[in-house]
Length: 99
Image (cartoon, rainbow, N blue to C red; front, side):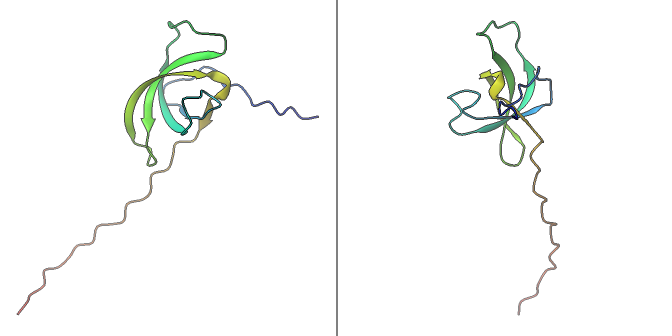
């Protein structure tokens, strides 16, 4: 019988991108992506919970806010960095003569 329990994430390190949902904390009713700066082990927490410092990312993967977050380690999901959409090449427009 396969174990349906999700795998617990180990210590997060700088540069990890994590997806935070209500599985990590009820505050993430709207899920967010965060690029981790570091865990904050000097802040004592309940068993299974951790403070992290990181940058909240927008859909393009750009940092939009620096945050300190209290999350349940078992609810944190490692993610690949969101892919930025390719920008269309700028067209060079030639001047048009009128008249």
